[in-house]
Each structure stands twice: as C-alpha cells, then as structure tokens.
Image 1 (cartoon, rainbow, N blue to C red):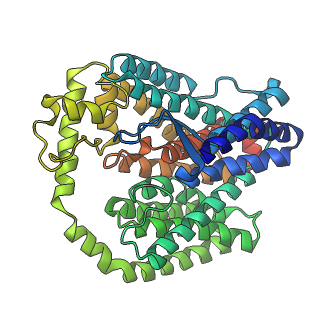
Image 2 (image 1 turned 135 degrees about the vertical axis):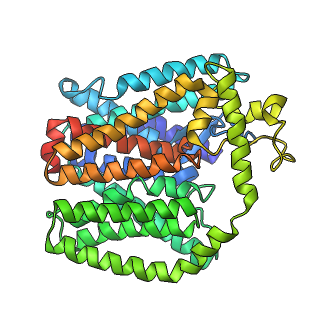
Image 3 (image 1 turned 90 degrees about the horizontal axis):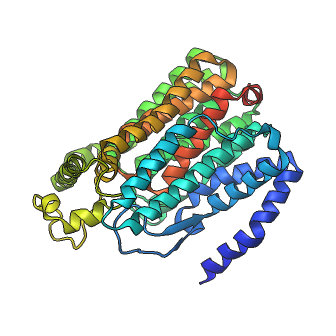
Amino acid sequence: MVKYLVFSTMLVGGVPLMAFAAMSSARLRGLLLSLLVFSTVLGDVASINFLSTETYRGPDRGFELTLTDLVALALALAVVARFPRRIRWLPLGTWPMALLFVLAIVSTVNAQAPLLGTFTLFKLVRIYLLFWCVVNVVGTGVSLDYVRYGLVAMGLVMTVLALKQKYVYGMYRITGPFDHSNGIPLYCNLVIPVLLVWGMTDRRLSSAEAALTVFASLGMVFAVVATQSRAGTLLTGLSVALTLVVANARARSPRVSWTTVTLVLIMLAGGALVADTIVQRFREAPESSEQARDEFNVAARRMAGDRAFGVGLNNFSLVLTTVDRYNEHIEVMKGEEQGGVAHHIYWLTAAEMGYVGLFAFLIVLGGFLWRALLGAIRATGLESLLLWGFFIGFVALYLQGTLEWGLRITPMAFQLTICGALTVALSANPRARRLAT
C-alpha cells in the first residue's frame, strides 16, 4: 500500500515538478537525465505492478510502472513544452519499432490470454517513450557528461551489491538488484565497454574522474564474474579485450597505455584467483540445465511453425502449460505446475509473435548495431570511441540472447533502449556530435 501511495504521489506531484525543473535549467535537465540512466539499476525497489499476476511465469506479470518511466515522462513533457522546434518527432528507428508494435498487437489479439499480452504492449509503449525522451533530451544540448554520471553511479551500486552479496552474505551466484543471477551479464555487458573506453580516452577528465569511471566498469566486470555465468564471463572478457584494442588503436596516449597495462595485470591476477572456480563451474554445470533449455526451445520452434503470428505475446508459459503438443516432450521440468520460458530470446519472440515478428524484432536490434558501427567508422574523437563501445556492448548482449530470455525483463530492456537512443543521438544528431567531441 505504501508503494502505491509513493508512486501515485510521484505521478501526480513529482512528474510536474521534475518537468518544470527540466524546463528551467539545462543543468537540472542533465541531472534528471543522470537519474534516468541510473534508475534502471534499482530493479524492483523502484517499480510497481498494477493488476499484478505474480504467480505467472512469463516475463510480464502486470501493468508495471517504474521510477525510470516517471523521469522519462517528466523529461518528455519538458522537451515538448520548452523546445518544440528542436524536437525530432520521429527519431531514427521509429518505423521499425512501430512495425514491431503493430505485430505485437496482432499477436495479442490472437492470444489465448490477451490480458497477458497487454502487459507487454504497455511495456512497449513505455520503451518507446524512453527512447524518444533520451534522443530528444540529448538533442536539446544537454552535456553527455550527465550520461556518464548516471553510468558511473550505476556501476558503483552494482559493485557494492556484488561485494556485499559475495563476501558478506556468501552467495555462490550473486543476483545483484535482480531476481536471478543471469540478469547481471545481460545488464552489465551492454555498458562495460562504454564506461571503460570513456574513462580511458576522454582527455577532459581529471585523473580522479577517469579512475572512477574505469573502476565503475571493472566493478561491473566483477559482478558478472561473481554470477558464475559461463557465457556471461566469457563475453565480458572478450568485450574488455576488444575495448582495450579499440582504445589503443584509435586514441593512444600515456593514460590509455598505463590503464591498459594496469587492467591486463588486474585481469591476469583476478583470472588466476578465480580460475579454479570458473573451471569447476564449466565442468560441473548440471546437464539438466542444458536439457531444459533445449526442451523449451523445441517447444518454441513448434509454436513458431504452427501460427503465423505466434501463440500470443507473453503467452509462451501459459501455452506451454496447457497445450499437450508443446509440453509432451518435456522431461526435466515435467513436475512443474507451470511451464517456464524459452531460454533464447529469439526463439521466444518467434514462438509468441511468429517468424514475421522475429524479423521485425531483429530489424530493431540490428538497427542499433548498424548505426553504432557506421557511426563509429565515420566519426572522430570521443564520439567514435563511445560508438565503438556501444557496438561491442550490443554484440555481447545479442550473442547472450541465444542463451537467455532476460532481455524481456524491464531493467535489461530499458538499458538496451537507453543505449540504443544514445547511439541514435550520437550517430545522427549533429549537435550531439559536437557535444561529444
């Protein structure tokens, strides 16, 4: 009840106040952007569900509202009121997102339980508001340093949680601010390269600022390793290595060289300390886990093949539970009262929205990746380096999507949306380019 009261008060009173503050000052607008970026790390602490169906095992279980949504709404209102002539009403990427949303509606209409689909439709609306907000706030002339402040704060919180859960609570696989440990690699790997390259190559930063930025990135690396995620740890290591290569190839300086040497030594020492644990994790990972993943993916492929628009948005778990054709081969999770979710974001999308929905989903994801790569090649200075960081982060996230469905969870989806919006702003907005160099 207290949570509902807090969110209602924030919606009625807090949003107008934040909007007024954002209209009155570029600095306050920047601080709210920092809060927006940071707020995704708060997880369930800063979210609430209306019409909650917590017993359902699908990704979305109600009409969710988060602190990120409230800040995004306030910033969007401020931009519309204060800068109507500078607004990009349809930023790059809007039409693929619109196509995906239309297909999501079709999928929901044909679903076994349309209400479950409307939970995700509501999230898609919130995602686009967030995307639109970030693109246009950056376009008003807000310094990108405020994005860095939010990312650094995010990294520090993740570091503290990881250390606390690992060494105070003695957790074998930490979960950070999320419900499951698998969410941390999806969340962190997207921004680790951005923070790392930012701290290493931005010559405007003092030594203390650069060190703190790099430390926040390394804290996220530690958090990923502490989850004992095999794929996550491997992708994190490759991401860091690629980021070091990019930084040394495109922005060589004494700071970059010394930071590279220091990080390599830290990674070698850290790798030696955790090598036994990681090797043990690879050797002793239960076969049932891989078998369950395969069984879910078989069911997903059957669903995708049976219906042109899938079995219904956010309906995979329900259909897997109630339709014999899709659960008759299940052995590992046979005793569960409800079916789980396919551990493969692409097969899950195909199952719920059909192959045409998967195609639209891939266009949206591919658009972020392509714009980051093209912008990184064409641009110069810090802008180019940041876009390389986003590109590496996108690749890591998309690869891990073949093993996890966690991209559908709100913090991960919002993290991707913010990074995608920043990529669009950096690669296509001349003013953003000037601010970043």
